[in-house]
Length: 295
Picture 1 (cartoon, one colour):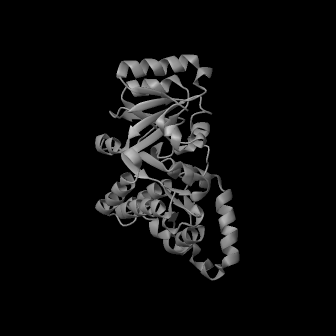
Picture 2 (tube, one colour):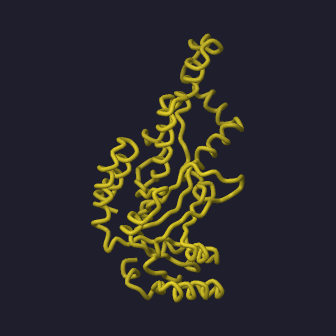
């Protein structure tokens, strides 16, 4: 990914979720699409029959972030010092105000360790992390993607037109590119601090916007090679333990690429072939299509 590509992604996300300027954000999304050959994006899927069932139903499955292998994906980052001092001095001054003179770097470190060790801390982090449901698509077509997201080429790759996705997606779903940064943990605009904490609607909106921004922020190394986009649906109630939910998604893939190892799952392969024939979707093979020339 070139420096300009990083900048376009950064600008699209920043204008949307920091500056709240959707028109400007969309300008940069258009720039990203203009340099993407044929507006093609890919969705690598494992060899599971329900993947084809979902396509037949004209739906898309969005999952909770906790099922991702990367435990930091969509994870929230707290400015502990800012938050605990706000709690003590602003919310409960009558109880903790007398300790104001004791607040120093040493105390800050003690308090941070105590907060992180408390069982409620993990509960809060997990609850915030799973505020949205997410699906991933990519501008990258590579052996890395086949290995990591299609079970070592036993699965499939759905090929979509990005402009179609943006134009035909349901209004309840949003699509944005992921931005890639040198060190996610030091990204100030996704760190939750005392200014995000409060009871009013504006505070809640700011908190949630920062959360979505955190879901669209990943480290350059090793993730920029994925050139990822994300489809979101926020505030959807699920029962405990549910991994995600299906949503209406009447956007048919323009092609399906079968992995080179799909023969390890003959029943799944047959299901893919049947769907391709019944729904008139082009069927291709990994290693024998025009996309492989760019791998």
